[in-house]
Length: 618
Image 1 (cartoon, one colour):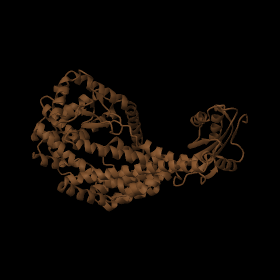
Image 2: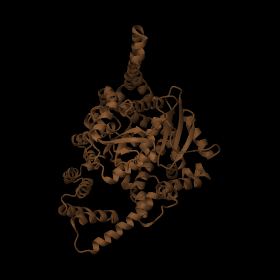
Image 3: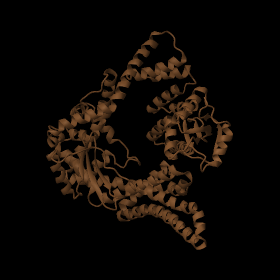
Image 4: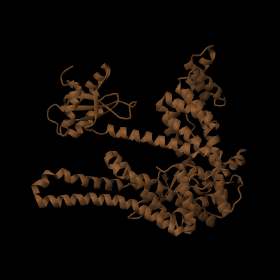
């Protein structure tokens, strides 16, 4: 796996090379993309060729031998079909509300005018969503062999933030990704990359042995190709900005970039925190979210200049394909100043009568989507307030209550500094993982390195905290540009993911090397399992054992359930699925019959002893 330092050096070298020899860079990128197809195509051809060769050889020797070894012949055919099916990626249109014929005619006319001016392909649809963003999306037909369908996705908050000229520059930018040839090439690069990851996912899900065939190659190839495509994507952003400047003017394009960046900061630091505060006071979510958001975006804010200054000091990372705001403004030749709010927004001018209904529809969708969570958080906040009052009314607190008190103050009174409270919690409850984690995370947010040791100690106290600890550490090391420490955290998280993937594969498979143990179910769990087996009405006997999952000692238990049918079963697979759906066990399970698996069935019976369930026996 490529380290963060190696990726940064590679991206820097490729950016220089792409500027010096753009045609050579694109040719190498195309060849690199083709290499992946050659590897996969070669695997398919080899698999099918082996099958054809085996069939021909066995026919020459004896047709009867071909019948006897039919399963052997199908192994390479099945592998080839697996790769082909994994390559067959289905791309759905982007999410959003499509404009119906006759809706928003001024918007449609403006989009068509800009499309023609940019030389972009015809659109299959214009979609509106509720993001502060816009996007050009190409959806391939048959992996792109039959062309593509092109969509323009426009965020309603974006239309409410910008004036018509600024919004036109955004549309021109998105059409810049479609037009001029580079959009088609980069889109193809993006699509084949998705295909390769789909192949790896498909192989990993169907057996670790297959994924290992490609693992070594893709450990080199995937990050190397990603670095190449990253350089192209960043170049395309500059080219799309140039299209916006050509069609709408550089000053207008620059002012739109500034307003979008400042508007995003307003939402992050003002609007959404106010919604969270409202969740504490109101039992139901607000019913005019999009209208409230539009007002927040269009109203001047005293922190706008300061937030712009912060945006202008941001550094370009090697994972975000967008250049920084200052880089884009410099390329446009535009000064960085906050433009005043528009007299009329693009949404008011271009959507007309459709605007109120869109605001209402998106607001209602949001209410329905978050309603249950909103009400649960409201109730939880009320309970927190009651519990906090109870703790503050007492004179002495236990160590556990000291930890609880710090957490409650952090949730209920966010204006208070929780660090002293967590320091006290760590002092009186030195074995509490949560107190160590929260104190460590808060210190790292303030760039205080003492938080590192606290997070590591939290993980030692509670190994299940590894994901949260690594997330906090990675953010801290990334801010400090400590690449060696960041790489160590990333490597650790990759190892955790590998162990989880291996454990999941072990849960989905039956193997001769499985370590089988007695089920160790308590009386209540055993009774529930027997009742659910009896309810199916098709099982004569069943044996239940527990399978040891290597590397997942703290995970849910996993059971193997061997069943023997009672009477005639016409559709064994469907009946097995009904058993799985009905079976109540405190963990995951595989249910199977001895047919075709006598080697594992015998081991299950030996470990289980007498049947765990027998029809008609209480």
